[in-house]
Image (cartoon, rainbow, N blue to C red; front, side):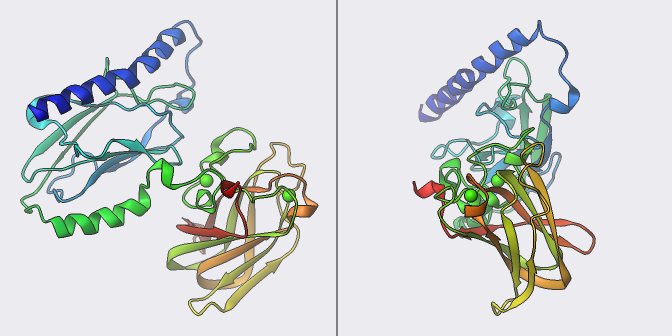
Length: 320
Ligand SMILES: [Ca+2]
Ligand SMILES: [Ca+2]
């Protein structure tokens, strides 16, 4: 009986979150056609679509979209035999960057899962502006591994860093400068919680520390500035012994009056360095207003960007 109730509640909540988007869709019938670029697309599925032999110990299934999404979701089942086994104790949630929707699960070994993502009438996944993603038929099969609570715990910790619930990343906290850019996706610069902001607008010079899980052979950093840019005047990279191995000083490549109010400052060191820790310095008093940073990536010699995984700062508006 308990199981039946859960299914009922799940279906009910699906409807609750689905209705506003359906209404939005109705309104859009009279509007000009949507630019295909504005339709959200799934860029990552975990496990991958059509994956076989998936470890049933994984505690989460998640989807990452290419643009920030609204709060709706629609993980609908095809039939009872292949329905996703949701973890009854933990609710589906969105990560702080609004890019990833995470379904906590309790999978079974040797089972084929079939999930209908945004199939009518269950339209839940939609961008912040209400544009729904296209329907996707998502399926994967678990392998023969037995359920091992210890292994599940380990996998849970590993995944948790990637998919922290929204509440764990406070608005404007240094952690908002980790991961791929999200605030930067808005057309113009904005005072947005998806970026780090210092506590005061102009009271003192500020620093932002970024760290990476593994050392990168880096030629420089790309700094995504999303509000009142121009304050960056020094970047220092450290080695594993905390010794300064690169020290750039100069004028921020993104000027204060840049037309869109945002920019990517591409800082290059005078040599390639192996680093997993970088400090950015900002002359905040000289550049009025909060000088917000959305994301920071180390750039390797192939110009591949590695997004920061950890962050700390001199101060944060999240403490206000
Ligand atoms: Ca300032
Ligand atoms: Ca961000």
